[in-house]
Image (cartoon, rainbow, N blue to C red):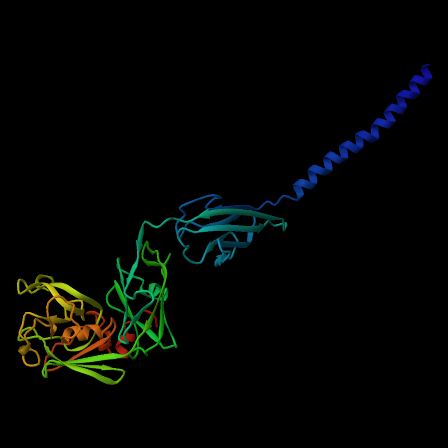
Length: 396
């Protein structure tokens, strides 16, 4: 029994030793292999994953310790990549420009340590919501038909300091194609026109791509809008303040010559090219609104068609005798046509001209008056030469 007991003990030990060796070898091998495959490079992304209200500039970058960056990708929600640069030593990366507001971005960085082992990091974040915004108020009515003298006008509710960036975000295109240029009147208004009057039948599209455009430091646009309009027939009327006539020419053919009473002594009508910008069958005219004190207040002026922002109109006059028209200038600067009260007549001179006019029609005033209408007074930009007009563009 002693011999068999000793033999069994030796057999058990013999079987146990390989098992112990195998278990010990396996444990030691797994620990060493895992450690060998973990990169020493430690990547840090700013902002962290899930961050919000991230600023447009200075708030996004990638860094690495104990390694160098090899790839960094910053993309918006559409998958478009934002350019950036890794520093020469590979320690950090930052975007090349500003980010857009109210946008979701993803940031992915890849680095290697000195042994070539890779480390990766991912973050998703959203940028800030602007506290200050601007919009542009435009004059063309969508799908309208206008005359050949129409000038696209956009007025902003805030001062624009980066005019070039804002101008690039606005396009005015014509079909058939014709060059259209911008001209800035101060920091709140930009107008667009071709070199010559529009060709009848031209289709014009105005596209405002102002959303997320920074027009001034910390002030961002909000609009994504397209407006289309058509150029109607050509009508150019000439008011001769010396001859007291308004000659209406459509498509090169004279339709009619009407008797007028223009601006009297001390109130001469502006000279130059003006364009009809508003039309009202009846409107109130109060001299206080144009800086003339208590000169007049007429509650129901018929067939009123605005030519300037400062208050020049072609309109009907029923409060003066018919004998005045064609003979004497008696107005405070407007071009007056004989009319009757109410704005319903289409047979009086004013009623006929109203019925045969549209927004965008040209009214050119000539005569002995010496004050030229300012190019920013209504749609009067046609009084600038093409060279002077294009000189007012913010984009060269």
